Image 1 (tube, one colour):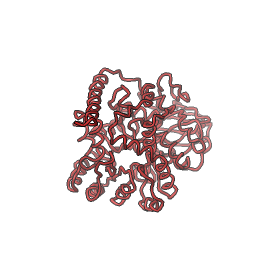
Image 2 (cartoon, helix red, strand yellow):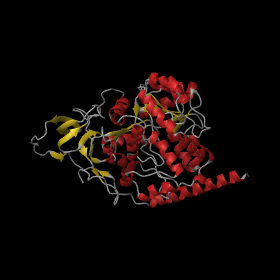
Image 3 (spheres, one colour):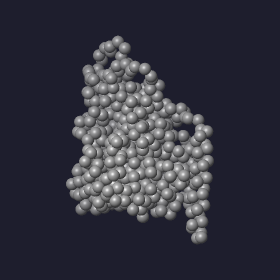
Image 4 (cartoon, one colour):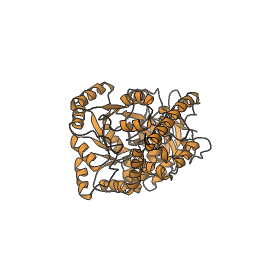
Length: 489
């Protein structure tokens, strides 16, 4: 056996042993205190008094109003200073800005963002993820890939009020070819005895057009909001879903009024997905620069570009040992987990992953330039964080918004990417009932401490989160020095 094979086997053995230990630790671990809670019982009519409003689309902040919420909806916006009715809950919004809750168009509700080398539990905690989303003001999530039927059960539990979390839209399992992404990744990093359970529930490996159509029809009883197809090679030598198989998935889903979204990585991936009829690009072109002459093809496709730029920059930062934490991460993630990103054991990452991390490091500027140029050409860019290693549910969407602005989007476009434009795409209508702070819309709202149109970082200064018209109590981790005292605490 070659030295490289022996070394690889040793790494796999260490990972397997680590997984066994983590199972034992997870079974014994105490559940941490919740990041958000809501009061039980009936919820009174609520008045957010004397608050500025950004509605999610306007070019300006509206002057102070008294915003009235009843039965989970915004029912009125009145001149400030009116007398509250008996029993009203009054929240002082003086000096603050009320805006729509944030929307993550690429969020994984069962993600595990903890480094496997950190020594912490390596198993997903969906309930904690949902809390983290809400803590950061993310009130709606499109989950484009998860274990089924778990994610559909989670979606239903949140909708019924049995589980506290953001509104969930879900794709369920990801459609790929045999051995395609994410199967190859699982074989690299997940022990067989976990992969045996996860792989068939998280993926649909289809090798023919007939198998693709059958798999779509088998999933339809779960009522997926979208279907996700994997048109990208990860690792770099993995096979890609394309050709007649890709078209079969898109066509069969469309027959049942279900749209398909495509995970892509290159220009060729993007164009093949668009030509097949995909409704959105999940990830932008992140592996290469889009040639200038190809930009009009992206505009002509008429579909949105969910850039997920931060996740690739984050991987590159981890690889280079320079990842820095944000305040929202410190308020929601244990300090020892955040500290562990400084010590990634490079030698334990397989050769294919080393190539992938190196590619992400080399293509930083190209990714950012792609976002700038497609947006300038009129392609609608949407905000998605893609929760995974180092990409923490909730706080990561704030980092994605900041990345979009750094890459050339105006603050307004970047905020629309995570509010009204995101809602319009998810609901497939220009007038969704969420994502807008307007009369008649769902009262999924956040209140922040500054003008996000001129000071985009103001969205990190969260003063209040409201879900379905109910003010949530936010509980930062002890000693994390929150930026502002949370409403309701």
